Length: 119
Image (tube, rainbow, N blue to C red; front, top):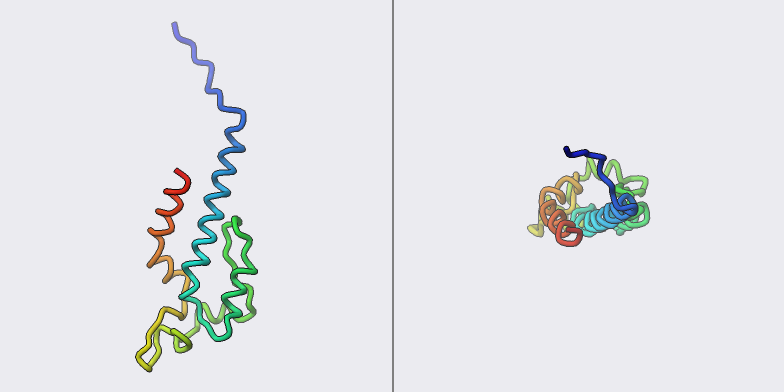
């Protein structure tokens, strides 16, 4: 006869798992900020800096705290420095929906970096 009494986990299992998760989240947050940089509308750099200062690395929330960040995210026409719709022939990446466009371009790269680091 065989008797099953349950599974016993390492006493530090939860602590170690949470630590790994937090390290992975910090990596993701940092990579999102880094890869988003060339997509963010730019005039003086204040909005870009507000993402760095408004984000708590590891929280899972990247927040741009400049007062005009929300209208710029949805309404920017991409006509500024390195803008995606520049008419002078020097097209860049900066413009509206910068996070979504960055994610479309770099999601696999970010996932790969996290997987390599934490598996």
